[in-house]
Length: 364
Ligand code: C5P
Image (cartoon, rainbow, N blue to C red; front, side, top):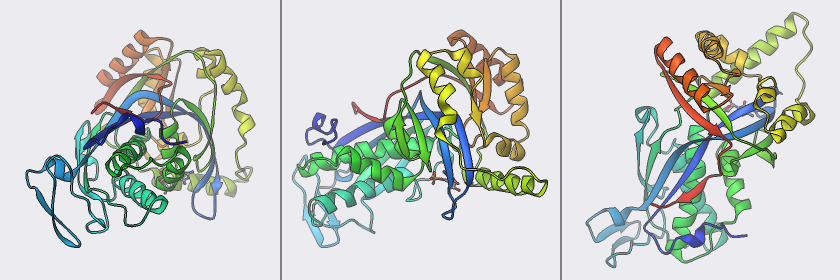
């Protein structure tokens, strides 16, 4: 099936998509695999806190009607971009800019997952059609709302949005069918463990590295106070500390770490199906929380403060340091967010609801 959104764009010079943050309601982590990744069983849920990614044909932004590519100079037709037979410097991305919350700490080079997503879509379209397929150079503009390095899949959300936007833009430009959902999902899994979920949205059981997904039925809306932190946490570092704790525990005779099993999520899945926030609060689990707290003991005070301010429960979100507080309603979420922000310097309170949608195209 072709990407359903691709049909909404008619030879546009710009496509914009948005993708939502996630929280792990259950995050069970197994021992490190030979490839260094950890086998996970997780229940992801998307939150209505989104970044947007706008992808624009580069020549559409410039006044010049003549641009160069590898093979020399080409004249453009007014109103339409010049096609390049091959990407300049091995990439279709001419520039990447970031605005919004914490934008100064987001990379603007090829290490940004959104940049890699654009090139992955171009390569896959060429593999599917012809390797000479003419595609434009593009610029990427990211608007951040999701905390950066916060354990909420902000970079992965940008990659997911970039996959959708680039797929629609390139297909429209070249007048070809867009990559289908299965291909986009495969590219997402190559980009990062959380990117497939950001494409999928809503609620899902994640296995493997987190990339193997099954939709989980839910009812109702959940209210959250999210407490973001001025200083981010590195995901690989949190997993490395997780491994150190496992090794240390072995030395004192604790049971060896086992691979997690999906049936452990059964009670949580039942609470989600019932739409029961109180019940869900008692079942939140994050095996990375101990490691995040080991690196950042200050997060304990945030968790305690949020719970005293009226949250049903608080957990570190993914690898942290954002703390996510499940609340009974919107008013309670506002109160928790405001109180933690007031009491603890360097924090920022955000309110959000879950679940939210999948990564999707929006009006530019
Ligand atoms: O997949 P992604 O690039 O987002 O992962 C970032 C890092 O998090 C990995 O390099 C690895 O250190 C760690 N990770 C892991 N096991 C997973 C997912 C991520 O060890 N299932």
